[in-house]
Amino acid sequence: MKVLFVSSSYSNYYTIDDIVRRLCGRGQDVHLILGMEEKTTISDDALQNVRQDIPDLIVEPLKKRKSLAKYTKTIREILNYAHVLNNEESRTWDVAKWFRFFPPFLWCIVSSSMGKKVLKTSGIQKTLRSFEQRIPVDSEIRAQIQQIRPDLVIVMPLINPDSRENEYLRAAQELGIPVLYSMVSWDNISTKGTFHGQPDYSVVWNEPLALELSGMHDIPLERIFITGAPRFDHLLDQVDGRILSRAEFFRMAGLDEKKDYILYVGSTFLVTNDHKKNADESVLVLEVADALAKDPRTKDVNLVLRPHPTNSTFLQKIRAQAKQNIIVFPHSGEIPDTEEKRSRFHNSLFHSIAVAGVNTTAFLEASALDKPCIIIQTQNSVETQLLPHFHHLADAGFLETALSADELVDAISRIKSGVDARCEQRRKFVRNFLRPCNMPAVDAYVKLVEDLGSRPKGSWTK
Image (cartoon, rainbow, N blue to C red; front, side):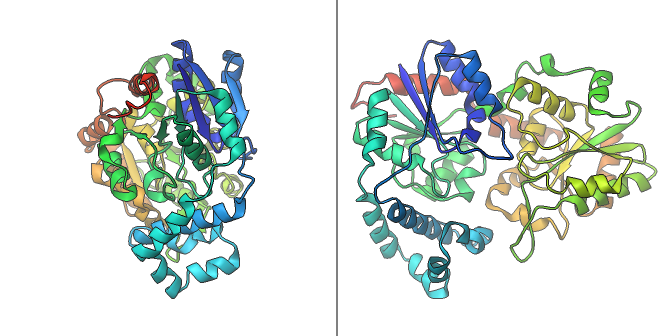
C-alpha cells in the first residue's frame, strides 16, 4: 500500500514521525510532500533523522499553484474570514487580527461594519464558495500526485490560512484517490480557517474534537474517525526508559538537587485586553519568581523556565535580572521532536513538583505524565485563556487556577505538602482527550490508514 502525507510545512512533520516510522516498519510505501521554507524558530531535526534512518523514504517539496494563484488565495481568505465571523463571539481576537492575511485595501473593505455584515450572510458565503469551487485543479500538482499513484492521501493541517494542502486535496479527489484530513494540534479546528473542499474522511483525537469539527465545519460525523493523540504516545508508553535519576537530570539542567522546582511552560504569545499580541512573558515569570522567593513556604523552590519553541524573545530580559531562583532550560525553546529532546522535556516535567503557565500545549503533555497543572489568570493573561480552544482544558477541570503570583505560591505550597486536588480530573482528561480508544493512538491511526488505503475504489464508506 502506498500512502502520501502532504503538509504545507516541514515543521508539522514531527507530529507524525512515529506514525511514518510504524507504517514503514510494517512494509508500507510512504511518501512525504512538504513545504520546505525554512522557519528560524523550528528545526527540521525529526525530518532529517527519519531520512537517515529510512533511506528509502521519499520526500518531495510541496508545489505552489501557478495559475490563478492570487485569485485563489484571495477568495479562500475571504471565505476563511467569513468563517471566523460566523463564530465572532468566541473569536474576537481573530476578527480583529485577520488582517495578516489580506492586502491593506481589501482588509479595509472586509473589516468595515458593512463588509462584515455582508460576509456574514449565508447567500454571499454560498456565492463565494461557488466561485471558489470552480477554480480548476493545478495541472502540475495533479501530475505530481499521479506520478506517485498513492492509495490514500493524508493532508494536514489543511485549514490554516493560505493552506496549500487544499490544492492536493482537490487534485487527489479529481484522480479518484481518497483523502484523509488529519489534525495536527488541539487548537486547529477552532482557531484557524475552514475547509475549501470536503475530505473523504477526517481523523481527530477524541469525541469533543469530532463534535467540534462537525459543528464548525459541516463535516459529517459518520466520516470522522477517532484514534487518540498519536503525538503524545511517547508520554504514555515506555516512559521509564527516558527518565533519568534526579541527580543526573539536575546536573544536566544546572539545578541544585537540594531544591525542588516548578516548571513554567511558555506560551506562543499572550493576548492583551485590546486584542494586541504580547510576546513578552518576562513580567509574569519575574512576578512568580519573586513571590516564590519571598514566601517562607516556597523560598527553596526554584522556577525552571521552558520557553515556547516559537517565543524566546523575552529571555534576554529574564537573564538580565539574574534571579538566582530562575533557571532557563533548555537554553532556548525547542520542540521535543527527537529522542534527545524528548528526554529533556520528559525529565523537566517528571522531576517538577507542578507545571505552571498561561495557555500552552505543554499542559496536555504535563497531564500525560500526571503532573499537577496551574494556570495563571491575571489581568495580563486572562484574554489568552478566552481563545476558543482553551475550553477543552477548562471544561475538563484538571487545572488549578491562580489569580495572582501569590495565589500560585499558595497552590504550590499545597501541592508540595502532598495535596493534589485535581488528580482524578487530570487522569480522566488523559483517558478522554489523549487516549480514548484504550490503545496507543499510533496503533489506532496506523490501523485506520491501512484500512482506508486498502479499500477498493467506490467502497469508501465508514
